[in-house]
Amino acid sequence: MTPYTAPSSPQRRRWLATLASAPLIAGAWPHLATAAACDDEANWIPPDAFLADLPRLMQALRVPAIGMAVVERGEVVWARNLGVTNAETRAPVAGDTLFEDASLSKPVFAYLVLQLADQGVIDLDAPLVHYRRMDYLADHPWVDLVTARDVLRHSTGMPNWRKDPAHEKLAPAVKPGTRIDYSGEAIFWLQLVVEKLTGESLDDSMQRLLFGPAGMRDSSYTWSKEIAARSVYGHRAVEDEESGMPPQMLRDTWNAAQTVADRWGKPLSAWRYEDAERALPDVQAITPKGLVNWPGDILANAAASLRTTPTDYARFMALMVRAPRAPWQIGEATRRAMLSKQIDVPGRWTGKGLGWNLESTPRGPVFYHSGSNGGIFKNFALGDLAGERALVALTNGGSGNVLYRRVVRAATGHDLLAFDL
Image (cartoon, rainbow, N blue to C red; front, side, top):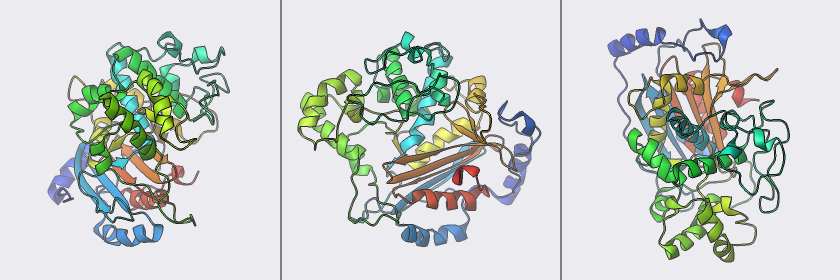
């Protein structure tokens, strides 16, 4: 992909003056209210010398592909994809190659929920059971307390994922709102609430409310033959002694579900939970035992199944770091709430916004999220609201986390506690 041209020196001096006066994340860390934005005069585009060395790092870490994109002044200014989609076929990545975003799916879904909250469709502080109570939820009083705000700040008390969802009921381990418990299960339940409120599948709602208006034309939470052809494969971490291509998880389950979707004449993008329930026996009949265990395995997943190009994800990051410009976007107060500390838990070095992690640094607060699917896809997104800048790095290797940390350090100068703790 041809990179965008970075601003010239006179241009850079003008926008640096603008950055110096930009507001910080409101209410995130009051003791840093007077802190400056990142004060380096370089933008977040990785240096040429680092980019020249990147193929060597990729080879050493056995990461076949990386996609990167940068936002400056609230606009996508640079993007680059390097490597191959599949280490066995050696098919090169292209500008429209899709990466599996893993948990970077969560902040994007959070944006949709906040759009619906701004429209009065959902109340962030109303118990989710008022909207939809799934039959796999335990009969427990704490279940009745979980709200959308709890879900987006990870204070539901629920596990990340149940070990045996076909037979195990879902319940909080602690009273909601009292501690942080990272939970994909909670995100998925909120997804099913959104299905009920909109009458649409997750992907249909995302396309209508966010992807379409934002110009994210290469983004989807679901699967199709066209998406399959453009998507990278995941690869083992460098320390993994096994050889060959590892199980592809979502690709494997999706391909089986696609067979049923083709038979029905109903694309997977239109499937809702009821469709996945109905399809489950047929999909299980054509897959190895244990691959598909419950409807959630073959339904678009707001917590994990987003696929984008790096440029598309950067377009989303641009929405986070600049003030709203169009009626379809979340309002300014909502955007600031999304990037502000939502729960106080003594002793935590990082904060939780609505869909984002928050960290204070010597150069001011930043927001971020990582992603890992199956130990074979590793991703990271970082934003600086005060500087109106962001960076996204997507990889298809189990050691991609080591690689993206080097990208972040080289491009931004940030060495986050999140990388070590």
